[in-house]
Image: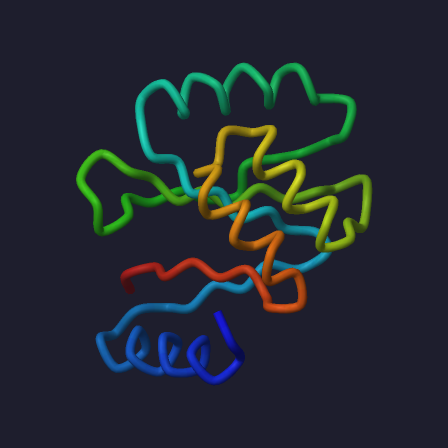
Length: 114
């Protein structure tokens, strides 16, 4: 997504009353699309406990049965590529993460209803 199309998406989301959540060096943004992906997330959060990753919040996305989860990295400041890798490891939608990797210079974003 180009910077201008990202800005358009952000503006549209805000006009609909949504909060726009951007990733940063201490926050992973997960797009969980199934019960299986959620079980994977829970299993891998336990496996990666030495990284001191803590779930900060979660909410239902606009797609039925899907979740958005924010995970805080308490121990490490993460690069964009490390965030994308961890998001994929934790069960986030692989298409979302592949597109994030392709557009590496664009920030990761989720939309949250207020």
